[in-house]
Image 1 (spheres, one colour):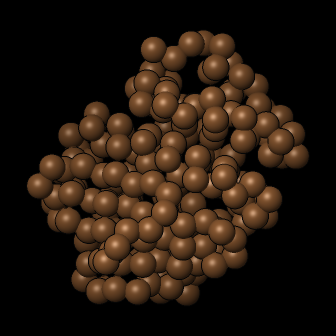
Image 2 (cartoon, one colour):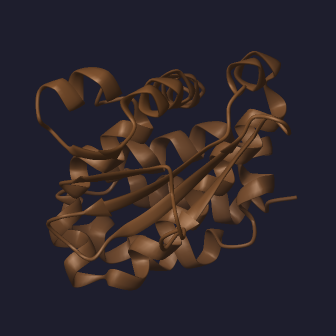
Length: 188
């Protein structure tokens, strides 16, 4: 169970101006570590609000100044997404193929990965790269975050050159509906 004091601290920080939030965010993410599953189950709006504020900031600049925060953010992000998938049968139905994906920002030191398991109907991910991933997506950090939050449509973004894709286009088309389903799980 997540204590209300943590939820209140997170919500208070999210209401601050951008500069104050950027100062508070490393501490917030540290406090959320190990509690993300419960936080998402009990307060899904809080994760959505954190992601929304992250998407609104200059991610590349923030990550360049706080590289450890990029890893914390990704661990929390993918933990939250995993829990959302576990709790939503409609999303689980979208997960029918195995796809591994690496993400690499080309404007800051941010790397991550996503593993979609069609047999188990699960999504996992985190910081760092997988060996022999099916796909590698490279682009600006704000675009990579936008792919997860739904601010960047995967297929339109690729066609518009917002990011580069290394790997099979047919595999990428299998990943796109999963990404859409994940971003649609975030509360508004």
